[in-house]
Length: 294
View: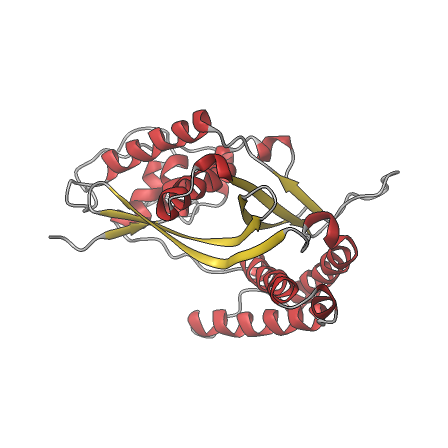
């Protein structure tokens, strides 16, 4: 039996955006993803917010409020920066000015979070179930879906579970980003697989994106929030739609033994949005950005 292959939401989402980009990355193994200031900041902010909530739920709100979150953010940024540098062979991936700007943005987010925390997280009637909880579910074709859930909180009064995904964003999600299935479908799969993994009915599981914003619009006449929450449509019809695409992904890309299919025709789906973040956008020898089958 072939060793079981693991897939993540990011892998599925990449295929959904452009199957040819997925092929170059996973079948041909030509990708060379490197971290950047955005991923550095996202990881560090996740860790600081999660630590605050861990202390709040396991100890007390008072103990959490006494944490020096700004110092923690600075320490996490430095630590994660050095780890990425080591992984990159010592090559710098952002400037000192970038680090200062993102740190100052983070301080503003944390200041807002501490002042408004009770609008988003309450201790009375809630308990923390997990942080960075591993999620695994067996799929057909010798494939295992894997992921990590940022926060799981139980509403003990309503007997509900809430799965929360923390996102860092420059200015939050607008209506187009909220409608982007590549952003929102992650929690639909997490909800479904967590339900099956723990034998909890899906109607007892809620999902939410917790979005922190680095920047605010200038010259606005009304107060702006540094935090945005968004609950995507996550009922049975929405979950069925993402399931059909996941099944198509597995049929198109994997053999019955779970091997990548190298005999398949993978479509190129060039667009301004897809190509902007593609590893191969400046490599015409690998992709000519023409929307044809290859």
